[in-house]
Structures are given as structure tokens and as C-alpha cells.
Image 1 (cartoon, helix red, strand yellow):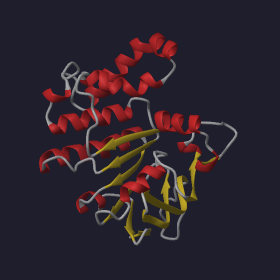
Image 2 (cartoon, rainbow, N blue to C red):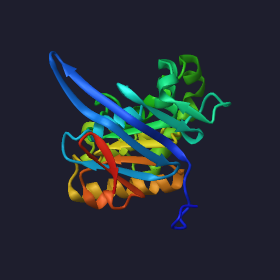
Image 3 (cartoon, helix red, strand yellow):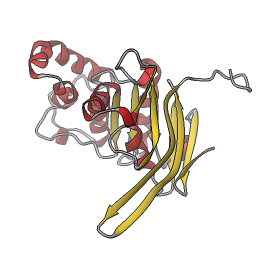
Image 4 (cartoon, helix red, strand yellow):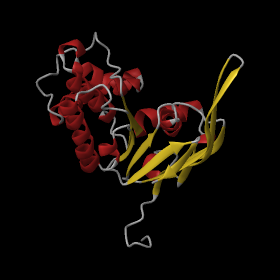
Length: 249
């Protein structure tokens, strides 16, 4: 228990002193300058800050989509499937195969742009993460995986849109397909980068409420980058990125 009597959550993700500089030719842009953040297992953490402050950069590092120049990120057992004899996994010790495995099986990602493939149906787009497993395994499990994809789409109100392609869906529906895709492999951590940024107010609220409901039902750890204060205020913890560092509000 913490001093105020609230339950203290074991860290799902703990980042310490992250530095990240981007280089383009002779130009260097230092984005993160010793950024630290701790997200408890099952916690909803919001990341806020001015445009260009480094919010998305931090999320990409936490989600193993990019690599820090220095600093360390550790993942508790709630966010690290293998190996079984380790209680904490250090990002710096992961080879590319294990990084890819964690991204595919332990993490789910939802971005401002939906990143759906227009030639595929909603169901096929949701199935994409499952297709990353060995071909023989996927073919053997394809029937059950298609049932799961249909079930996930049904849970988010798109059960009658399985055969629709992205261009036949509204913006809010496309983002819900993206959320279903992120849930396909049963992740423990859901990373969302401005997931309501392309939506009108009504659809924005629908998508945000859906994320909260799924987080509760699935026991997910939710990390949300947002510029919308009303959504950040619903979080368990809010981190503001300023001057390359994260300050907990």
C-alpha cells in the first residue's frame, strides 16, 4: 500500500533515464533527455505535452518500436512472456527475435492513422497479427483464429461488418477495426498514440469509452498519448513531457 492507502501496482513497464536523439545529415535533434516513467500493471497512464515534445517517441521506445540511445526499460512478468525464469526483462538484453515476439504477442498498438489495408476486409485486417506465427501453425489454427477475429469485432459492435473493406467504413468504425486488430493476440499492454486524433467529437468519445471498457474487461495496462485533456484526466497517472523529461502531474 502507498502512504495514502491506495493499492500500489507492480510495474508493468519501468523506464529510467531515456535519451533519444534523431539525426538527419548534420542536424541532430535531441528529443528525450533523461526521461523516466513507471506504469503499474493494469494501470491507465496518459502521456501529454506540447506538439514535438517527444510523446510519440517515448511511446515507441516503451513499445519496442524504436531503441533508446541510452537508458533502460524493464518489463515485469505481466508484460513479458518469456523466458519463464525471469521476473524482469530488460529491453537492452532482448535480441530482435524476442523484441518482435513481445511486440506481436504481449503488446497491442493503436495509432492516429488506422493503418488498415484497403484491399482486405475488416476480418482479414484483424487477423494480420495472427499471421505472424509460423505458416504451418497459422494454417492449422486458421479456423479458430477466424472465429476469434469475428468474436472481437462483434464485441466492439462490428459483427455485421466482417466482410466490409476499410473504405466502406466510417472513420470511427475503421479505428474500432484497428483496436480489434490490436487485441487479436491477447496483449497485456495496449499502446495508443492519439487514437481519437482523426475523429469527430462523437466518434472520439465512442472510441475512448471503448478503450476504457476493454481495459477493464481484459485487465490491460493502457498507455495513451493524447492532446485531449478530458481523456488524460480519466487516467490513473498523467505524465507531462517537457524539456525532454517526464513529470508526473
